[in-house]
Every structure is written in structure tokens, then in C-alpha cells.
Length: 260
Image (tube, rainbow, N blue to C red; front, side, top):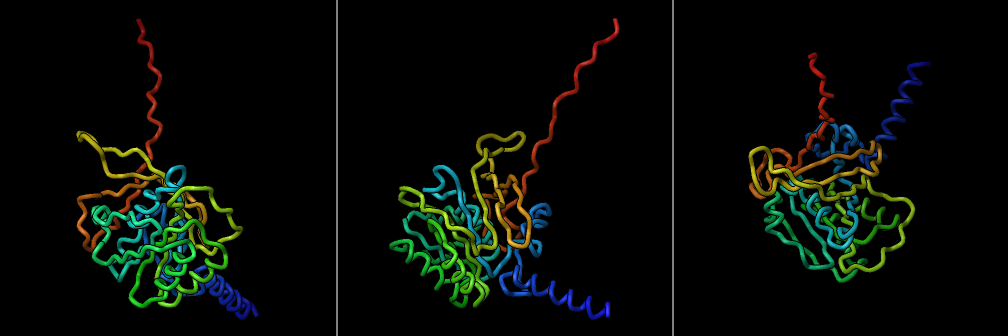
């Protein structure tokens, strides 16, 4: 009797894992290569075949530079497997800058959408297209209905989506909708760079990265940098993002008075 109960329990756990993986029990993941980050993500890495939400704060809600750079770096190894489609509403994506971050721009297809609805529709079509590995869409928001449609499109051929929250022409923010079909939600903000000991000028670009929501995983916050930015050659190699160790408390011990 206990064996039957154990097998039923194992089957139920497998079903739950498949649902958390977007309905695909064999869902693949893309590790960052940093244990503290990968341990927070289901499957030990960024879930593939699903879509992810990225946003910034302050001026980044209009510019979208930090979330876009992070998305490109996170998806650079994935983009080498197939075509990458980037959907914009404002034609200001600088492809040479992506090359400097290690993104294979020769695989990039840019689409300029007329409005929010068209951007989401193009994203859905691109995710459903064979040979497309990653889709980036700059949108103001994704409601629950649109999010479910995007997820179904991801599952057709295993493409991965990156919805970059951006209001390209400013204005008031749209009202947030309750709930989300995104596998993860990330908030990306800029951080001061460090040129390293004995070096001058600017160091590699850095970001404060917060994993605000993760279906089937845990949240967390880290300091990350593009280790080989603008010296990177887009070839097979380690992940272009790396974790930066936080500084410890290095206060000096109180001085002791010498005996006279």
C-alpha cells in the first residue's frame, strides 16, 4: 500500500514540476554559471521555452538601456543557436553596441512596430516561428491574456521571450494588471563600474539585478557585470555575465594604546 502511495506522490510531483516549467516536463535551462543565482532558478538556470519580464526604474522606464543590455547578455549564448528577433516601437537599437557586449548581431532581425498591440502580435508570431531561438520585445506591459498567448507561442518550438518594459515616448504609466504569466521578473538598475586595481578609466559595465518573481524558484538580488564588454568576440565561450562579489565589512579594529 505504501509503495502505491509513493508512486502516486511521485507522479503528482512530476505533474507539478511540468506545470511550473510551463507545461513541458523536459524544460531546458540556461545557467548563468554563478551558483548563488542558478540556485534560485528552477532547473539551475534561466528557464527556456518560456518568456521573461525585465524592467528598470526612473529614466530607464523610457530609455530601457539597462534592461535591454542585461537581456542581450543573458540571451547571448542562446542567440547563437538560432535567429534572434528584436521588436521596437522606437527605432534606436544600436547593433554595434550589442556586438561589443558579445551578442551575435549577425543573427539579429529588427522589427519596428507601430504600436503596443502590434509589438505584442509580432512577438507572438516570432516566438511561433521555427528557427527563432530568442525574441526581445520592448512593450509597456503584458496583461494576463497576452501573457498566456506568448507562453503558448514559446511552447510551439521552444523559443524564449524577453519582454523589456519600456515607455519609449514617455507619458503616464499604464495601470498594472494583477497576475502575470512570466516565468521570471527582473529589475535592472545601473551600478558604478570598477576599473580594477592599477587601472584607470571605466571598468566593465555593472548592474544591480533583482529577481523579483520566479515561478518555481526563489527571489534574490546581486551585483553583476559584463566581464569582457567591448573586448568580447561572439564565439562559443563562458557566459558574458558574471557575479561580482560584494565588499565585506572591512572596518579596522580599534587601535590599542601601548603601555608606557
